Length: 469
Image 1 (cartoon, rainbow, N blue to C red):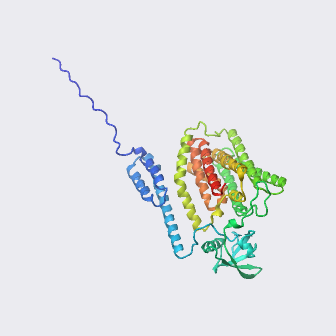
Image 2 (tube, rainbow, N blue to C red):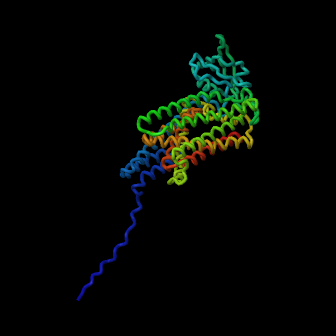
Image 3 (cartoon, one colour):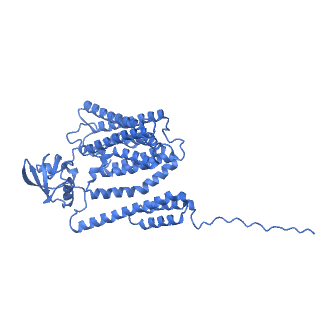
């Protein structure tokens, strides 16, 4: 008799427990959740720290160490932002209680610019705007202002603080020295729009005030250009010693110089043809400048054999979406931190704006004006700058130095050319790092170009809406 043993049916395989996240995804998911949770200062801080602690304890995979470190770094950043928010709220509340802050309303000014390089005694008048309260009180260029409402002045920001603390329609008493003679004058701060230069057409030559606001940013631009030039030359020399091939930094410097020359020649030529400088000439100069950036950078990239676009690069579309998410979640943190620094330094918003804002404020732009502005600002400039900095310079830096160092250095050079933003040049540094990450992550410049176009287009739309364009 033969006995056949029939084995019991195999138990069906049970799916892995879904009670806990997969170890390889834990820190990464916690980081993503923390990005979203911490958008609002203070409110999301407990959530961010909880996620950081959970990610650090639960995820023992060594491959996830960068994500765990990023979690802790993000939690520390959010803690600093929350502290800044509490400080600003408490300071504003205390000043309001003591009557040191004027009621909310439009910014009020005296109509003067002070010399930032003058080191006392007092503060020195650098410019007096026509039809301004200061001009009506016979304040002149070169005058020294020693006191404002009895408060001694040692630097321009102290005068700004006095003006902001003065109630509306109340005068500011200035102790002014001219030719060794001191006198007191009363000046009532007003909305700067009340003495703005009369509107002018795009190609109508501007008067003496047509370039108002440019003088304050020209010094920063020169300093930024000098820093960028020096950094590019230094990188070329250091790169040669470390075995880097090519002359990429010198090429970048040459393209930038050529673009500046193109802008200058276009503006000067049109000014001579039209009988004076015009807003339209500045806009057409931007076309020349950004066009040169695009064409020259593209030619250099093709000559060097570097891919000039992200077409065919692995993951460029996904990289764009990820970098856009990082921008949306990190931007509030960065901007709030910079705003906190601006408050500490008593910097006015108009001291940290693009020179083109003043150009737009000089009169109606019309459809033609906005088109002339939008194409170079929202399209040509992003393409040219990405081809130059992320397409040409960043890969060369990455070839002989670490990834992080290459990102930060290329972003710092990029930011120095936007020094007219003052304190908010830090925002450009952040954008430079993000755009550089998109370039290295995707393997091409398609993702950073699209992201840069998105950023500039959004900023231009907000500016047009603010100015009623």
